[in-house]
Image 1 (cartoon, rainbow, N blue to C red):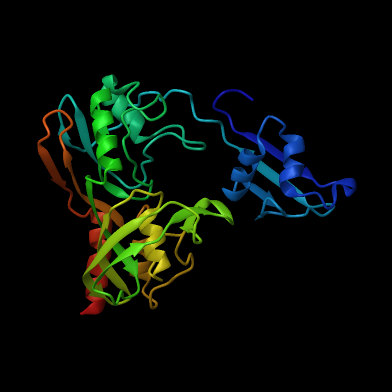
Image 2: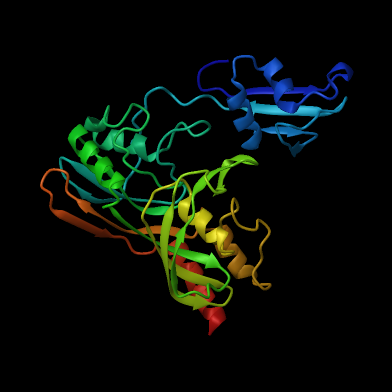
Length: 323
């Protein structure tokens, strides 16, 4: 397999292989991959049995057709890409960017190009080596489907300062989200540990007692609408998919979130609203506020980003329905 090319495997299960677990069947054909990597491919939807997604533990039947696509691994070092950035603030120490939905923060399996890290590296070559070769300058991340403010470090000293502030929970991160349904509580604190969903490696979940990592989200209702609620969320911790998991745990997943919401959810026979949700290009979640101490001067820096059109149009339709 040449670098940058995906490998594909397709074969029918032989009679002597009947009863074999799917992951073991794949391991025999992809010996260069670890069991963990194979399970991630299965959970990530890169493997189908009889044309449908399956589980790594699925016991194969003779004649079933298994198809697998193995995306190329991400490059060891991020390659600069001249992608336009919406820069909110920049000096010789930090870079604050308003990331659009659809852009991945840093390279990963199946997403080696078009990342914020690659764009930052092209814009400011000095970030190379700051924080690691695959994540140059990246201090924290935003999900692909989330838009809004993110800060990158341009020097090792700035990286150390910002990561320390994140660890100390002194970085303020404010999000605006549109949740399904009407959130009855005016405000609250969700203090629930988050860990990998044991049923899927691509999902996180509220963990059982004694499992996962502590996660704390403060929320406040800003506007109740028909079938939806505009909510402000503030993070005290920064776990993967934290707001999405926590809001879903309340029974109010975010609009556009197919991972934690109801994939086939429809909104009272409103095709226009359904189109707006489908056109979000991600999740109805926006990092609207960011504040931290400047890593060199100690000066408080406060930034705000207005809701993007993708969410404003959605809210306008929801308000029309509520009037």
